[in-house]
Image (cartoon, rainbow, N blue to C red; front, side, top):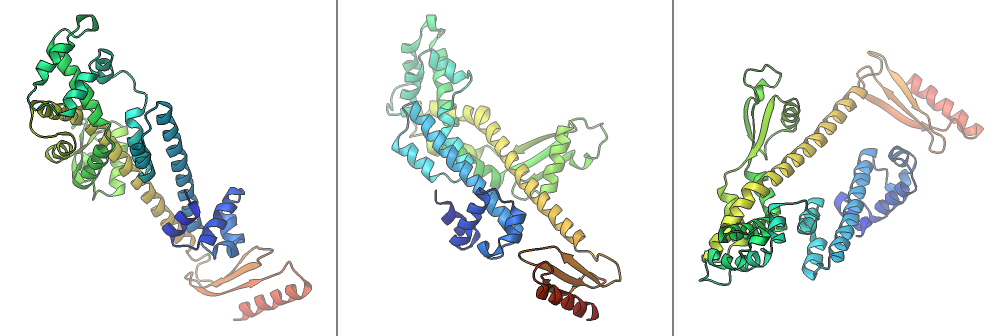
Length: 366
């Protein structure tokens, strides 16, 4: 990844400045140092913007490293195809990468893995292909009955195959991405009292609901605290029709008996695997957004606090020590309004020291 080009484009800064910031950070310089003492290298960008650039650089590097790691892990399994490589290249977020890797991630024992151990994967693949428009899945399952493997009946074999199909559906990166978007735009955050009789500061959330796309950050954080303290039960809810319709379009081909079986497996995947997992992702994203907003609000409030008049009803001169770049001087009135600014060099030559004294005297008299 071309980090310089990426950062330059995202933050609308010169490529030269983006490259300089990367080099300065890699050399171990702190953000305040870069903002204050290397202005000529980044066009006098403020520390907040430099911090955002640094955070984005860290994310992009982590993203690139994870993409490379996922490619190597899938390749080690002998399953890396051009399609998967292209999907990794097109991924834009960590979530996209993890969704691509999900089918290849080592899993703990699941219903699907148990079914595979019983030799039911070929049956699942045949049903999922949906190419035979006349065969009934239960008839196909007859050939996989094997008491020694724990498959006592055709129903057992069919259920195992459906469990495998359900996991395939759950691991589908495109389905997970679309379901997340559907929930983000259409779902509702709901909270109810864990105990209606219990008194707490969270009574306003004992019967609360608000759309995911509209809920404010402070409400998200309050609900999370109430849940941690066991006063609230929280969920993200969406009507099943839209998600199931989307899954059907991606997984079901036609209306054969095998297609009906695939849809049954997909409904199970949605209820048992997809919905709980993506619900957690939505809540995690809401929490992350709320945390960022809270930090920004704190920064705004702190800025206002620091910009209050240093001494009420008095005009004040403030001096900010500096050597190579000089000592910054500012004059504010009794309300905190900036009256004048200048730079002096009291640590340089005798001439500069004299000039600095004269500047201060002029400001005092003015």
